[in-house]
Length: 161
Length: 161
Image (cartoon, helix red, strand yellow):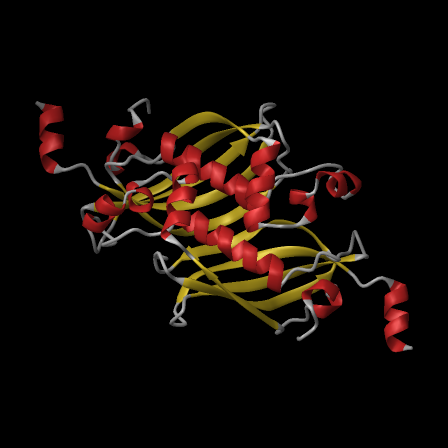
C-alpha cells in the first residue's frame, strides 16, 4: 500500500488496504476564521464564552474538522488521476472536541470495493476514515464512498511487460 | 414554527416541525478559496481543467456545501440559548453539484425528538436537512442529530402566566 497517491487507480484500493497521513495542525486563528464564516456558535467563535461553557474552552466546528479531514483525504488517499466524485458519507461521528494546537492525522481503511456495473471503467470504494489527534485518540470517524477510475488498459499492459 | 431562533428550546422542535431559511450565494472566489485550503482537486480549484472534466465546469467541494449548510443551520434552526452539541450526521448525500452563482436555501424537518434519559435537562433532536438551489432542486441532504437544552422551568412558568 505504498504506491504514491498520484499513481493510484481503483485496483489499488482492495478491501483491507490502509492509508495514513498527516499531521495537520489546528490553530486557534483558523478555528475562529472558519467558525465566523460557517458555524458562528460561541463555543467555536468566542474563547472567553467557550471557556465558561460545556467544553471548557474553544473547540473547532465539527465541519472544520471534516474539512481538515478532506485535506488529508485528498493528499493521502485519493489520486488526481482517478478520483471522480463522491455520492456521500455515512455515519459521520464527532467523538471528541478538537482544540487549538491539536495535530490531526488520518487513517483510511478500505471496507468494500467493487467495479461499477453501469460504468465498467470505474469502481465504487467504501472506506472507514478515522481522524486521530497527537495522542492517538480518535476524534472523528466517517464512512466515505468514492467513485474511482480503473487503471487504463495500456497502463496495465506496461506494468506486466 | 415561527418562534425566533434565539428563543427556541427542545420543546420547540416537535416531530414534523419545518424550519426554512436562506439564501446564501456561492461565489466562484469562495469555491476556489475553500477548495485550495481543504479540497484541492482540479474540479474545485481549476476552472479551465474543470470545464474539460466530468462536470463541465467548476463545482464546489461537497464539504464547502456542507459548511454553507451549517451557516444556514445555525441561523435558521439552532438557537444560541439551547444548542449544546452534535454527536454526528447520517446519510450525507451530494445529489447535484453546486456551481458558482448558485443560491442555496435550507429546509430542516424534525423527524424525532426525545428527552435524554441520562440528562433530563436536554433532548435529542433528529432531523432531515435539505439544501435547495435557486430552482428549488435538492442539491444535498443529510440527517443531523442535535443535543438541545430544554426550556428552563422559570421560563415555562412565565409563558403560562
